[in-house]
Amino acid sequence: MKRISHQYNESMEERKLDGIWNLERLLQELLCYADESGIIRDMEPSDDSPYGIKVRRFVAAMKAYGKEDVLNNGIEHIISASCSEDKMNELWQLLRSNLGDRYFAVFAYADFLDRACERKHLFEALFRYRKGLYRVEKLWAGMIECSRTIALAYRLTSNLNQTQIKAVSDVIDRMLVLLMGDDYDKTFTEDELLPFGYPDVTDKELEDMIFDNW
Image (cartoon, rainbow, N blue to C red):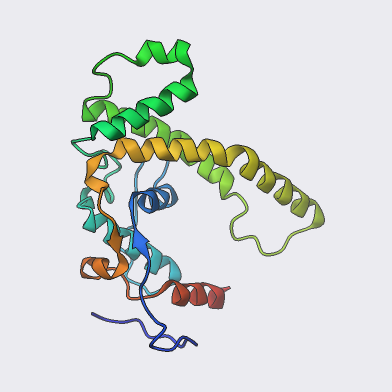
């Protein structure tokens, strides 16, 4: 497999792919690349830029989970056909604790959400909401220099994100993870993803590339 050639301070003994991919990481990448409706575009970059490497990492993970159909086709294929009883029980507990008993009783009939199509519709609605929160969280991403007033706004909103919005995002993320079902129970090492086209670039190398491009 082709290895991207760069100059780094790491010795060969220290250089290793030691990251892992699980469903939680995959969801964060979906939030990054998909629009509000779940459409994912331009997922076939061939360049060795930091962006291209990140995209190829994501694409390789999607392939490993057998979710190639999601790429460029929206999220209609993201939901598993099966969702374990444990996952469904946890989902209902989250719904009860966040709806309250009055509204929970309206929805908690026996077979609600048993079918994949119902879980898909709920996933799509929650994903749209979560994408809005994601945009708020990433509003200041990439900012290097700013005025004192913008710095004040950045600090204020960053504090609000941590004390208010993050808790909401964490609950929605967990619901989305549960709704995705049983196809994602496996965790992959980066080495295991190499046959799926995962770039042979360590996190440290990628970090250095990003820094060099600033």
